[in-house]
Length: 118
Length: 282
Length: 146
Image 1 (cartoon, rainbow over the protein chains, first blue to last red):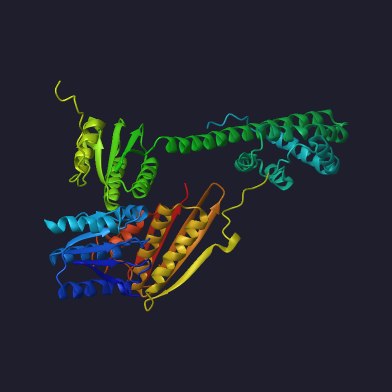
Image 2: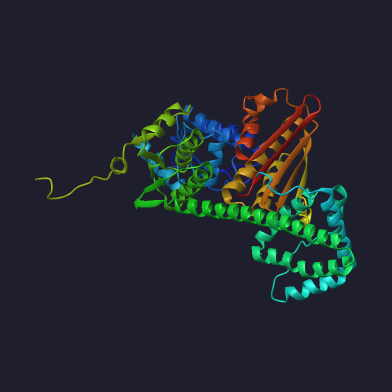
């Protein structure tokens, strides 16, 4: 199972599937980096709507992905975190303090388009 | 609890041995009479005397384990809603038939007969006291648990005061269980309604301990992850002190003295302007 | 008098045991799925189900990455007075040299370990860790329904 990377305008949307084995999580950073190298994206959106468990490994990967895309010059937002995942992330001490978060995909895209203009 | 029950002498245990002997000899008649006295409508109280436990207590010269067994059986009876009266009555029903068996067996030895009556009464009292005490204790515990549950539900309302704005007023003592529940409830409402701002009003909270203050911080962090910003209002000096002493990042935590200022800030953040046409001239 | 029985573990056969090998990292996904399902059946809410699934994920990964092989047992406890889930993870791997540090989240080597042990502990009600270098590690953690 690989993670679909979708381009919407100049935004790269990474939709994480519900159950992601570690091997696929490990490939995530390189495949996103490949895509960011090829084209200039102004925004990266990581959507967790389908994800119902985020453990420390996936949590760190998401945090690193966000940092990576920011370094590559793209605004980054994480969306679709469920209440249960939000609570466990905070209890794990992985509350993504330097990452923008929005309720859902729609709001994430809206935020990116707002910041796009500035 | 202090042990106020009377001591048991060797003579008492001799008496109990006689009681047990009489019971064994007349077991069938006694059971039949107890069953008749119970009638059909009364629920059967489970956990009647175990003769072997009784015999063991006599051999060991110690009624402690017997009493402990009574106490251990009580929670199950409480759970099944067996009234205390039914338990006591079940015990009382045994008395008449047993007394008859003493009279039949020890009629020619008045001293022994009297001792059987006396020690049986003493044992019955001890069992009744143990059962009643354990019963009351268990009932109070169950009641307190229920009260806590209801209180927790009542005391954490989440109110949508405006589109995109939720207010969660906290009143009274917040313990860690309630704080956890509060966090879940709040996050669920934020995602259901798509709220962007949460005003946590702690005006009604006199004090918080470190644990609960930590829950506040966690709630704010979790709310941010689902896309909502938290404004804390109504902090008492004591609560402020606890928050400051906590070694957690308070950056990004917005606080206002009261609900009104918090609400004004929320409106400003969302781009609303509060306007009263015609009133400006005065 | 009737004696209350000790904890009755067998009815319903609510014990799931999973064998873990390093070759198979999908086991992490299966283990947390099984844990969530048992938690749901027992009556845990979604947040607690997620806490349990996450904690199981952490300790199973620990075995996959550091010990290579081991077992995880997830057991439903339905006793008079309390209900809960008990998870036991055992391996015969290299063990953890500094247990205190692992529990505090101090280890940062490897992929996600360190936070993992401390994280699992933060998510559960009870957490115990035994480890001996060269012998292996055993984690026992519980969550009770309140």
